[in-house]
Length: 336
Image: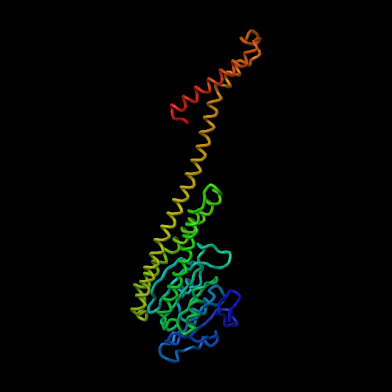
């Protein structure tokens, strides 16, 4: 059953559980409720219990300590808002904090959603505060009989889906950059610059979160417990390589946006300089003409040509000759 946030809900009384599944070791799983999970024991070889919990609900911290015997510092990490990606081994358990793209309504791509993870090979507990689509996709695979077969495969599939969804945001940003490159920058420069600034901000935000995630996945591949099998490590290594390529793509997207931004600004500056240059030429042309007309127009007795009917045309001819001489000089000096 789906709850309001679109996740599977078993309806436990305390509101801790978002969904629970018991993996059968063959790619399938059966739903399990909160009460049954408290006394669950593997009924067949290969069974794994996966519980997806609200990390911010009252009682989750105590349940992690009392039921799973998780040390207090680790339980605090699993339920806290300190969501920087990291991973480490604690005895035969794996503890990790991972981040995925926030595709919730109204969210920006650089707004990441965290998921904490704890597993001892038989139990796997994931915790989140805000809706995250990656667990839902894995649950659908399990319900279709095509999901992971053990805890190691479940961890690798969660990380793989999380990283794959990151690529969608990167592709979308590249599409926006291509669209802006094909657009006419003269139409709406301010709007284009605003969109480019948003793309650059998204790139920086994604890289800020994805870079430590790369380190976290390397820790999983290097230090995971023995139940994390060789093929799981290979899958993690492939996810690390994919994430590294995405980080490179982010760098390329950021540089492309920067080049496009500089190009638009250079065009705007060039247009402004051209306009100022033309205004300067016009002012240079009319400055001596204004001087001549102003000099001859002063109201002082004895000015030559005051009573001569041809004086007006003489002045007009003089101004025309000055303008022609200016244009010839400007052309010779390559100002025009």
